[in-house]
Length: 353
Image 1 (cartoon, rainbow, N blue to C red):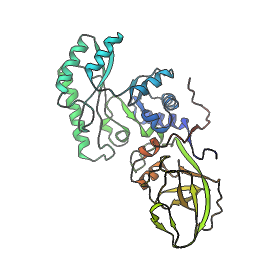
Image 2 (cartoon, rainbow, N blue to C red):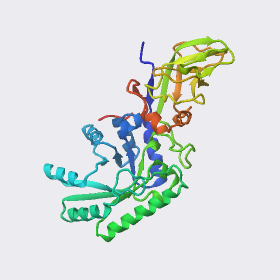
Image 3 (cartoon, rainbow, N blue to C red):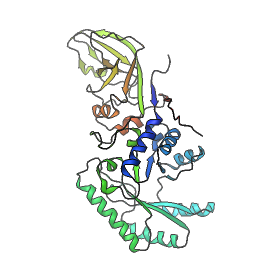
Image 4 (cartoon, one colour):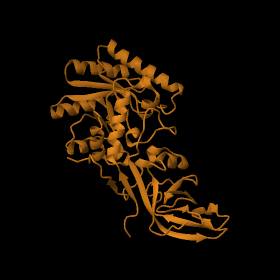
């Protein structure tokens, strides 16, 4: 059979979302395109973000940065590295001055300088004074920005400001200061500093369950599948592995060619729904590896081959994530490789050149 699932990507929406962020925040924007641009396609998403006004690109791995450069994109890129001395040694080998951002651990307890911060500042001051390394920026990451009133937010901002003040006292210019992620862009205006890092927002999704004020986001991905089979089942029939659902009256179910191997979490419950003929059809029974079932209702005129919309403008990926007990980040970035990404034609078609 033909490939049953397709993710349609509207790159113009990415450009428009970035443009909105730039207009509202009025600070330079770093578009975060790690993890294949959250499943939207690294290169096309990078082009789209830059067309929308982003000045920086952010990735997790050097391999992602190399792929962007190989595509001819010259915008500044922030990639996560760890050891200052290894970076310095590599710069000596290639005869170039390394341009770095210093990450400060202000409460995430992940990457970033903590107890060793004074030592690193001292070493960076020496290397910068000798023009052997260039400090471009100083940054950190918020652990609870999706909960604006969480006390750790204020504490992290306090620690970050203290770190910046310490660097100034040590005659080390911190450069571009940034700590705001998508959640902070929405709910923590004091976190914007010199630059903001927009991830999920540029793909048209809110990092919280509440639609953000001041933004009219447009989801960039619409995921469609099809019905493999439509069948009537009688009262008392069970659906799926574990027989977790027993229907109380005759109904019609559709078997959708989308399972946990494709990115639909096995934990997704019956509050999730897909659209068939613009009508909601709720998930019924457990998600299988390659398939799931939806309750179409006994009066449905659905037939095998019909298209269903798994998420997009409606339902939102956020709704599916809530039904799965997870976050929309995991939904869009977890869409499997056997689902092709197809660009939606727009007036300003994103080019790869």
